[in-house]
Amino acid sequence: MKKNTTDMWKIIHIPDKLPIPPNQQPTVNVLASVIDPKHANTLIRRLNQIAPLKNVCHVKRIRKKHLEGGKTQLSVILCLASEDNSLLNSLPQDVQELSDSYQLSPFVTKVCKYAATSKEEWAEQCKLWPTSYHPPT
Image (cartoon, rainbow, N blue to C red; front, side, top):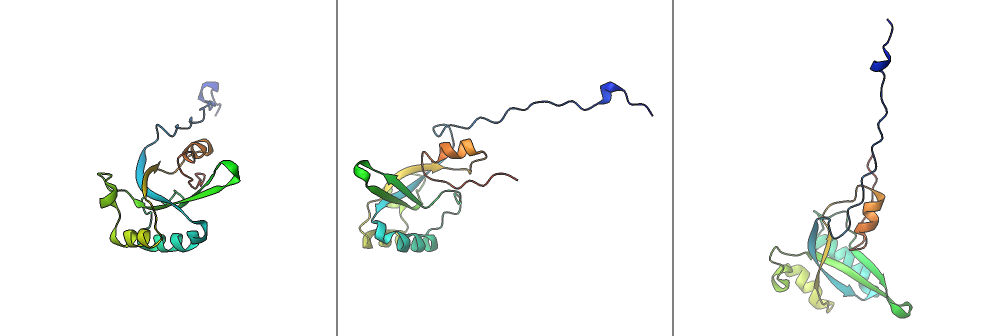
């Protein structure tokens, strides 16, 4: 049987998806606090037990920021913020107790709601808060 040339496969170029800028990506509010680096390991282990980040597991719990003068600042996500974003009502009791015992000062910040689908999108997400990137297979 002879094949007709019109039955051949055509190659179509599909351009890469452009990264979504952080200001256009869906976000969720979390409560975070600046912490003393010597308490980082203890705080992260405890927070992972009492307030796991189930819905945003691609978000890293801790952020390291380089400040002027060569100093570094560590911030940790305490928990997801409540819907009304009221700081006083957002902290679960055990997180509040941990916050009090380490004299933390919680603040509301945004993290990307969904995991990045491309390296470019991941780079944009990390401008808000560090996230993990696992390329789609």
